[in-house]
Length: 164
Image (cartoon, rainbow, N blue to C red; front, side, top):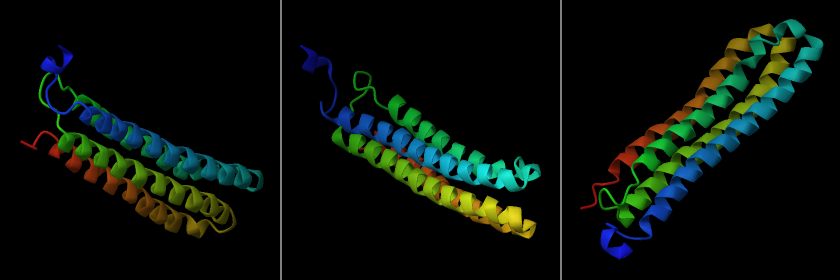
């Protein structure tokens, strides 16, 4: 009886939900690593130059945004999975899986880059204030990597539902 009311492939939602989980988990791992690594640099720098602590919070904030990217994709994916309302095929599940992986892994790599650059950058900024603008530019380019993953994730998730 349950098979009669289910539309599409019965295993397809598994892949979609794994995509939503991957987007959130990997993006949050990147955000956590970037926050922790940059936070260590801020704490170390704050001992030498406490007046620069608030200025040096920028990498921590940028790392925190990565988790929001994963949350956005996870919500988009999870709202697109409703096999009782409309058919959900393997194509849709794979589109959502690839969407989640694209956003999540891009967020993880961006978080690693932000953490490493943030740690070294705030320490260097404490010794030479002229390096601040350069550090910010490098952090922006690292954050752009996650933004590329978010854009690709949105495009891929929009492909779900176009299989038939």
